Length: 59
Length: 392
Image 1: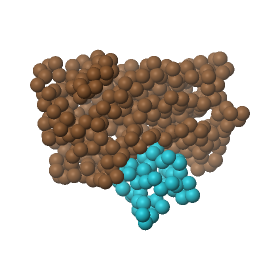
Image 2 (image 1 turned 120 degrees about the vertical axis):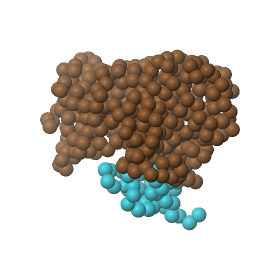
Image 3 (image 1 turned 135 degrees about the vertical axis):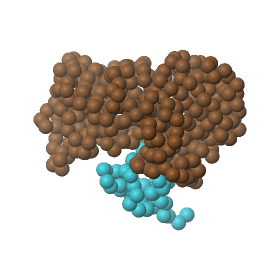
Image 4 (image 1 turned 60 degrees about the vertical axis):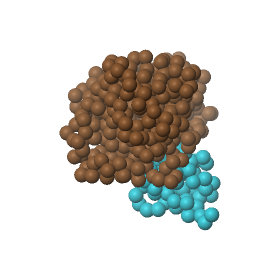
């Protein structure tokens, strides 16, 4: 599961652009991951320039 | 805000304003919708553009230009630096806040209606044709109709996604980016400085774009995969601590920098995507202002033709795609091939290129000579380099 770590998100939408199932919604000042559609590929975690997203599954 | 227009443009950046301006000039009704409170703010951009690239659209105003760039310094992983003076063209670092604002005013003065705080949530689609947009205007839901919608709403285009266009960028073509607007930094005023190598910016580059008076855009774009182990912010902060410990960071902006090939089909019945939304970004530099303006302008012209012919089909709008590819899209594909090669260069190879280029007489040294040296192992790309950098 991807967790949004804290309130530092700048809503830049980099994560949306790389998300294969297109399951991230960013509005002006909110970010939401549609969990049922998430495939835990972690690409959004990698691309985030300021490390706001985190994979919290135990692997 | 009326309920009907000939054309609706979504997004008030340079691409959107050029599109709206072009439609208004042709005498058709057009409205430009910007989600934020202001046109031109917040800025998410390095703000660099070539002088000739800008002049093909407008005469630059002094207030837009933070600094004039006459050359660049490339810094290799071992800190060997190579100075290159631009022989023919100069560049600008813009004040996008003022520049974007003025472009939307040009559109408005030609007759376009401009609305801010207009957040487009979705499209009106009838019989497979896009017929307008659904939006929140000043917090109230509203629908407005048009036979043509132009999506200039940036990377991960909401309009494109609503129309069923795949807007995602492959991870390998995405850079993780961060930029500081930093004050109290002593940097040359007429020079862009770019650092490459795995220590500075793996799979990308770190830039210093001066804006005058000890002020500069200092940013970084790194390979999306590389940022798995260390974020763009960590690289940039290390650089700032080492080089500008006394800098005041007045703005922090982050974002993905896409470096893909242009979208093959950024159109649907009644819809055209322009600029970042259509992945029209120089894949080597990440520069997107001029491609956005050009595609915006072309989309406005094709929209006017479509209205004249009363034909809004994807087939008619394919004229837009053809012109975009002819005028610069094919060049972007060449640049993409070059990017693929230079991204794979090791630190040792980059250091070697710097040493080779340093041996070239400074008067003969050019960006073309750098790239020719960089792709020497792939002779098939030399022709691409020559085609692109003929004028530099």
